[in-house]
Length: 292
Length: 335
Image (tube, rainbow over all chains, first blue to last red):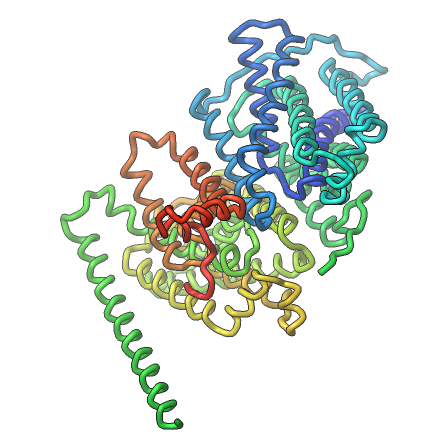
C-alpha cells in the first residue's frame, strides 16, 4: 500500500509536468490548428538556459528561473513568426513537416553548442522532504505541485476572465469573425505561443530538477507524451489537458512499477491509439462537425 | 477519321514500346555500371560500402513517398515497419538452414509480407483519422514496435541480434531497387494511383465520386510498409547486426527528409535525393556534426518555399528564374 501510494504521488508529480506541457500543445492547437512538434524541444532549451544562467554565469536561482521563462516565451514567438506564420494558409502536411524541422533544428543547435554527452546539473530546488507516516514526499515533488497548481489557476483565470483571454477564445472559435470584431489575430496567436512556451519553460525547470541530467534530446519524449496527454483530455480543451496530463503521469508511473519499465512507453502510446479509435475528441473535447 | 485514330493508336503504342526498350536497356546498363563501380578501382572501399545503404534508402524513400507524396498523409513510423522486416528476415535466416540465396529470397518476401500485414493492421484503426492525428498515431505505432522489440526475448532485447549472414550485395539491392521503382511507378500511374492522388487533392470530392477513401488508404499503407520491410531485410543482412535503437524516430525523420528534398510526389526525386543524402554525409566527414542541422534546415526551407504567401510574391515578381517557381511544388499528374 505504501509502495502504491508512493508510486501514485510520483505519478501525480510527473503528470503535473506533462499537464504543463500539454497546456502549450492544446492552446496552440486550439488557435493555430497545428501540432507544434518543437514544443517538446522548448523544454530542452529551457533546461539548458537554466543551466547556463545558474552554473556558468552564476545568477541566483530565482533570477535564473525568470530568465529561463522569458527566454522560452521569446523563442516561442520567434519560431511562430519565422516558420509557422508564412504557412498559415498552407496544407497541414507542410506545417507539420516544418514543425518537425523546427524540432530538429533546436536539437541540432544544442548538440552543436553543448555536445552530445549528458551534463549533470544539480537541482536548484532546495526544499526538505515531508514525511507522512511511512510515505516520503520529496521537496521537488512539493514544489512541482505548487508551481503547476499556480500556473493552472492563473491560466484558467486569464483565459476566462480577461479581455486578452476572451480574444484568444474568440480567435480559436472563428478567426475571420474575431478579426471583424476588432481582435488582432496575429498578436493573439503570438501571445498564445508566448504563454505556451513560457509554460514549457516552467516545465523544463521542473523536469530538470527531477532528472538532473542535460541532453539535447531530453525534450523529445516528454513532449510526445504530453501530446498524448493533450489528445487524451481532448485537444483544444484547457481543463482536458490538465486532466489528461495527470492521468497519463499516474498510468505511466503505475505501469512502470507493476508491469514493466520497458513496456511503459508502449502502454502510454497504446492509450493514445485506443483513445483515438474510441473517442477521437478526447475525454473533455468537443465534437467538431466538418463542413464541406 | 477512323484511320487517323488507329494511326494515332499505333504511334502511341510505338512510343510506349520504344519507352519500354529504353527502360530495359537503361536497367541493364545501370547494372553494368553498378558492378563496375563495386568491383573496379574507381571507388575507394569507403564508397563501395555505400552502394547497399544507398539502395536501401532508395527503397525506403520511394515507399514513404507513396504515403506522403501521393496519398498526402504524413507517416512518422516508417522505421517501425523497416524494423519489423529486418527482424523477421534476420530471425528467419538465423533459424533456417537452407542454401544461401534461396533462404535470403524467402526471408525478403516474408519480411515484406509481415511488415505489409502490420501496415494493414495499423491502417485499419486509423482510417477515421486524418492529417495531424494520423501522423501522431503512426509515430506512436513506431515507438510501440520499438519498445516491444526492446522487451522481447526472441529479438535479443536491447542488445539485438548478431551473426546474421551477410547476404546483401549490390546485385540483390539493385534488383530490389529496380523492382520497387517499377512497382511503385505502375501503382501510382494505375487506376489505384489516380484514386489515391484524388484523395490527396480533396478527399471529400473523392468520396462523392465513389472512391472508397478508407480502402485506398489502408492499401497504400500496406504497400509502403511492404517495401519498408524489404528494405529492412536488406539492412539486417548488410552489417550482420541489429539493434532496436537503429530504428528510432530519427530514422523515420531521416527518410522523410529524403522524400521532402527529392520532392513529394516524385519517384525520380526520391531516388536522386536518397543517393545524395547517403553519399553526402560520408563525403563531408569533416562537417558530420552539422548533418542534423542540415536536415532540419532542408525541411524548413523546402516547406517555406511552398508557402502560398511566398509563392504569390514570387509569381508577382516575374524576374525570378523559372526553376525557383517550380521549386517544391507537388507535381501534378507526372511522376
